[in-house]
Image 1 (cartoon, rainbow, N blue to C red):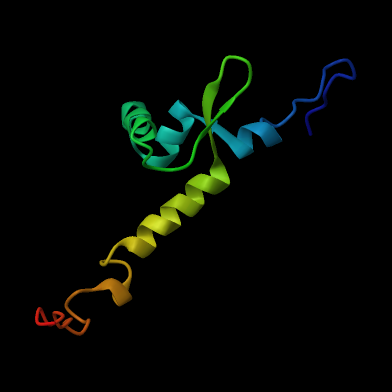
Image 2: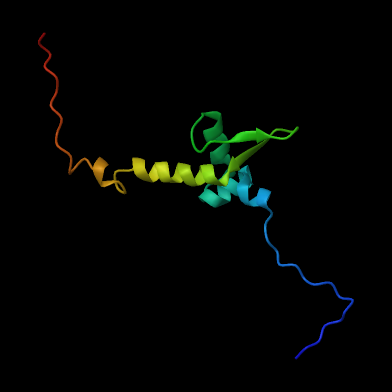
Length: 101
């Protein structure tokens, strides 16, 4: 059984802080989503994509991890391939409204 010195500090396991786990920078969010940072910047400029906000005096663009997960879920629900209710092949055809008044 190995002995350790009484003067050696215990090694702390590397765990992300609560802030790191809750908020992601553009680079972190892009990695989390599997996209490029440029794509997120373009989406933000066009007011598309996941919700983001500016934080701090320098106004860094940040993303909440919960918001990213919710946005991913919204994307899945809006896709006809993963949401059978939106599949155009299984829905009833819509009738056009009569043009006669």
